[in-house]
Image 1 (cartoon, rainbow, N blue to C red):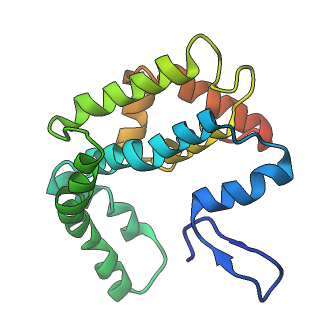
Image 2 (image 1 turned 90 degrees about the vertical axis):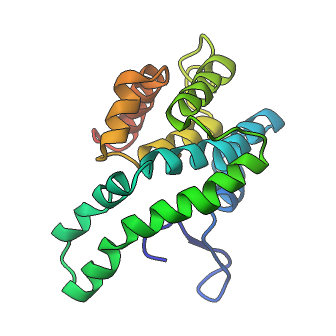
Length: 189
């Protein structure tokens, strides 16, 4: 589990938790974050709806999928491992369109025009959750803000992240989240 959030609970022999939602559920009370029913509803929307649209958009064509894994060529690892990861793009295209799309449809979404539907979902977040405030949480991000931003921010460095920030209704909120995170990390988002 090198690339996923993880926390070991109860010391070195305790269970290793690798589910982001569970990690937030464990840490939120420790840091004083509120997990209201509304916050949890938006978090569920993010993990069940938004993330699936993001995966489908990232893997809209085999060419896009393969291109999204090209960064692996610059990584310091054995060539045999690079080859394994470089084929991941084509594999992810199949997974996105055979598994992710099917699961998204089970939630009641059409999953027919992915770019348009993703824009509509982001508009729902901005209009219904953020509204006229800087963040869902008001002047400071709530756990819902950080969960949703985390799903989107993991795309940073990909063309899609820039497209979302520059062309979607969520762009201004994304910029505010980047600015807020930068102040928390000493200047880098």
